[in-house]
Length: 180
Image 1 (cartoon, rainbow, N blue to C red):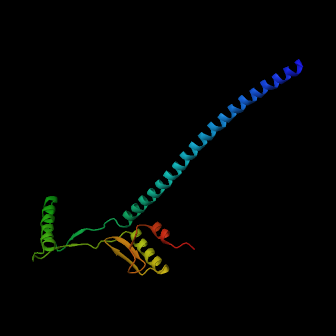
Image 2 (image 1 turned 180 degrees about the horizontal axis):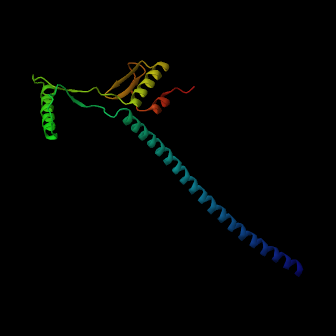
Image 3 (image 1 turned 90 degrees about the vertical axis):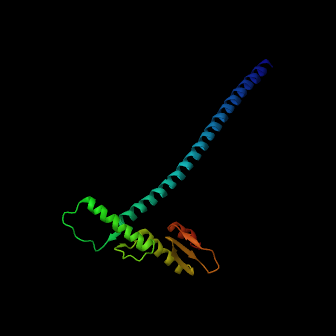
């Protein structure tokens, strides 16, 4: 009987040791799981941030491309200027200010003086032209009745009663595309 009691007490001590090791293992797995979830959240956040930065970089690249295609959006061209031999910088600036004031008075204040300056045609950037073309094609393909430009913005409207949709980028067109 003593032998049986000693074996039972040995089994109890082994059971207690196993229980303690199981609790430690459970704590370790729980800690590892918590760290895994934190790392997973951090990776998801970093992936989203990287997507946003990529989109921002793409928009900056488009702006740079537009600047390369259209280095002079508008200019002031002065015509019929008299030739002056050996004209200095100061002479040029005085003449420029005089002509600019004539332009201002003639065009903006609507006086009757003869203007000698004209504004050049403003050329829209390449990507803007491309987006407008894509918007017109999208409108044709998806039964939109209206596609127009107003104040440098591209708009779509399905019917005369529908609200207008501002097209900011190709992504807007992709979002509007009906799902098949």
